[in-house]
Length: 294
Ligand SMILES: C[S@@+](CC[C@H](N)C(=O)[O-])C[C@H]1O[C@@H](n2cnc3c(N)ncnc32)[C@H](O)[C@@H]1O
Image (cartoon, rainbow, N blue to C red; front, side):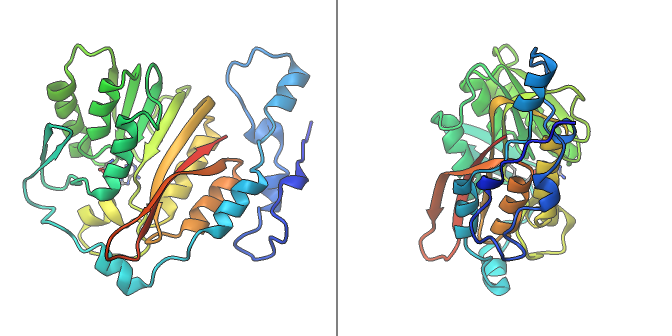
């Protein structure tokens, strides 16, 4: 069994219990976590190349610089439902009009942080395989067709969101676009094809730390908490879902447990960088679009 350790990558002085990389994570067998699909290399080279790519010191420093979650009352006030989730609504982006049936998430400014970066090419889609986790209305799938993605997996736990995404895609992107849509109703990647691999994954997760409502649709859309994101990273790592050079883009703010979530990803060997960060007028909320690679 070949074990490769890059102990010099650990953050200096990472003594705080929630900041240190898991010792078990740092010493995982290459065969257990570093599996790479179809490399075509001989055995020793493959073992060395597929060792878990431990996160760099820069990634740990970024993670340690992230702010604490805002106080509970501030989080609840910042996430007051903007509209009645049980009603029929509408949404427009980039000249496209979307229907928002009851229960389906109506995109907000955080969603737009991702949409804008898909549309302007900051998150690269052309010719690639893309998975949008938690597709909601499906705005990302329409952008992906415009940007020339080869395949788009649209995943959501909520069947009506997946149906809605498919309908919007057909109407706005056209059935004859060069992009293939693969809609999947699934709890995270549970029902994703076993051997599937993608170049880009995006997720605007319902990671708000406080229960802002007891309505199950609002909870699913907004405030499941950190666990949904840490499980998402676990599945990407365990299933080796990301193609070499691929990226995961996740948008979260200080209404969530930023250090807990990003620390979990770093323990799994992801690297972390900020693709975009912004504050909002009159609010203490700071939103980050993180780019993670493995
Ligand atoms: C904040 S909304 C984002 C929707 C859309 N991507 C956007 O940015 O406007 C979160 C979405 O994640 C979905 N979701 C929640 N938990 C999920 C899970 N375990 N697996 C898949 N999707 C989930 C919700 O149904 C919802 O559509």
